[in-house]
Image (tube, rainbow, N blue to C red; front, side, top):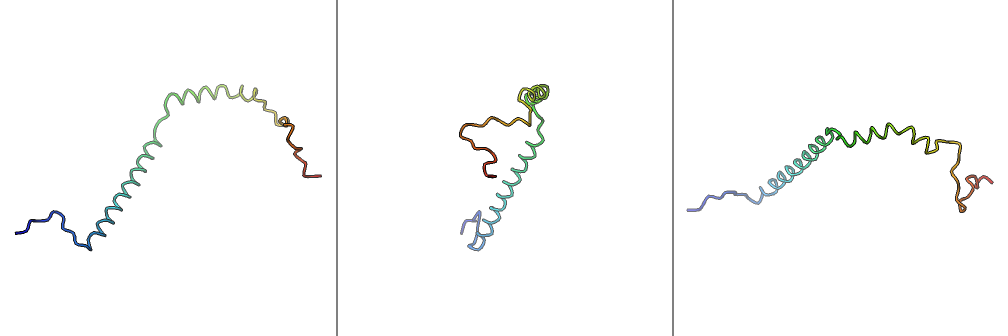
Length: 89
């Protein structure tokens, strides 16, 4: 008497079985990626970023004044740089 086979597949059944396994794996990977993206997007900012934002917003005006917020002043040119209108001659 023959022993019962646990997984009896004919040659024609192997291709659809592999395709179902591959599609299941791909859908599982996509759903995992979407789950991780949704979970990380809804995280609350921690206290360190709150402190950094508060510190930056309170000293923002002073930084602009010390940085030289003068749009009319051109930055000093190096000795090797050409005049910006050299091509208009």
